Image (cartoon, rainbow, N blue to C red):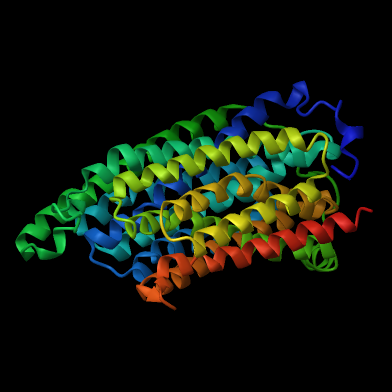
Length: 438
């Protein structure tokens, strides 16, 4: 097993020389979808203002974004089973670019539904990339340290996320005319005439559009580079493949895997809820969107630091035990965000990120650890489909936030009871999977 006895795996080479270039190229993809994830989160607040939407309706951005994962993960896995990891990656990059370029007509027509559709197509590409990249990284070397290798690769995901957040914070949000405020801190946009609103809306949607077009061009460059580089075939080509029915049966009867998929749904929901509504949480304290986004950036820096720290700690501490410990830490921070009204509550909310850092790749690695090579592509697909948690729960949190006040407490604070529940599920998975190794 990959990390049952970490002291025995300390001296194993994490990435062998023959896999180094593929590892670097595939790891760069983690940054690409990190950018897409985290430039999109603050767009919920941006669309809420410029399109004059409720928090619940604006959060349909997340429903479209993460719904694309649920739609395309299984087709991506079947494609990989028939062809190869490399072809799956190339198709994913192509779909990513198409979705990004669809922001051009979406901005021209000024339809919220068109933006949601663009994100839906874009995440078809991300589903291919995530279904492909993570099991590919796991396969590039020894099984004993595969989970650590995936944690290292995933450490570059928040670098892309930081770039996305920085673009949102420094380029998009400060240039939104719809977020201008009066001396009392109130947004002026709703008080303007329809003609003034139309002019501002045209400007602001172009500001939102441009970063997606730019990342689409970068994705095309990556498509060309990866198309030209030879990749090792680690899909088990040439070996007898299990039928889809047999694979599904194997996965279903693997209790650690089955519980891992369930846990991943709750983890992704917690992550997306935590980051998406930091802006609304800060807004309740009188902080404007551009300033509030800086707290998202601090959260991502903590997340990035936590990834490297946890990758190091897994040399000496069982990953399952770390998962449980970090789950408890995240739960305590979420409880602080619920109960404390004011800046200390916001600090607790930001602090959740350092504990979330190891969760996705560790749950992923534990779940796939005893899944055979023949079953790994479909196994990875269901773990990617678990990202649908990010589509289902943010609208529910948005509905809670729209209440304004609940039980005499700000509703935005109360809404963080949902991530708290999710971290309880993650902690229990860490404990249960650790006990199975004893």
